[in-house]
Image (cartoon, rainbow, N blue to C red; front, side):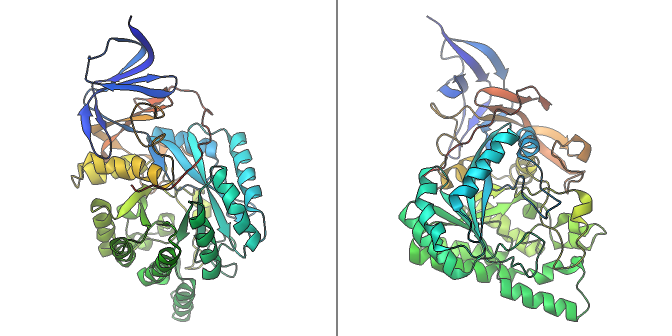
Length: 471
């Protein structure tokens, strides 16, 4: 008797972080039902997608986005509805957003509120959550960590910069080392992971004071305020805390050679450290700040030199980095350009839609990095680090049928008018890509096919995180 399934993807090369093979992919009831040699199984599919000449990869996992995040009382970053639709067009099927706890507020209440907000937004792709612990958090927050992990939020973000006395208007995010030590200690006991935005606030404050004294406080000098040394100093402190607590550390958006070297050395010493870079920093350097609209290119910790960018690529190719993320934090052009000094230049950029395509073009097509490493960095790696694997990040029987087709020969021009996020600018406007996602499937449902939206909006669901794993 011929088996009937919902979907058959045939003719493409199915890719994981460790293998590539020409296989048929059978999908039924939202899950991968089987992988088989082409034509080996007699099945009848309600729908067939011909992937000939394309890579068939796990749906992208973007481990770092900020949807519905307030920059001020009047300005909010784009919604998860808009951001997730853009994500699907770019080949991402799962995003991880942040529930923000502030000062003496409840961690669990912040998580519940964010989950409620996302239910109202109705994202079109699946999502998980990090908990952001900020400011003068109390010991009560530590007591809430075990329950948060049990409820599927196993990662906790903290900041070594952004006090309420200065910065880009995102409030008092800074936590001192004692509070970070406390969170790491508690997270380690319950199989959690701590992620840290690493910049030394005191070094940055000194640099800013010097720039003002010299009359060079314009936003074009922001790279001289938020330096590689400031990043390295904070990373090395956090690596020490990670080593002594045995708490896994995820170093967010590394931007410098010094920072990458610190993580590389720690990994050699068996510190449980994972590195992240953004396709933004892999694409742009500090020279962009000199442009008339240079602040459009800024996202914290900021752009660095060409030498720093080369080091980021070394870390990407040589397995130091576990994830390439977007850090999507989207505001309108006029808001981005409103900050004109080194201490008011606005955070964020419009990146979730371009992440997969830009990174494929610059890594696999241009630098001849393996497609397997690409999958490891854009999908399997982040899924493992944050305990979503093998439900996410893998095309294998039993995994969610989140599938993306990439045409490696596509000549794709990114144009602002052709993007789908709730934003009126892109720092990739006019960017030519060799290779680009063409089709995005979530849970067996085709959302985007050949660059056109064909699926149901608002079908995304919460995915609980679990035990951090080794990429």
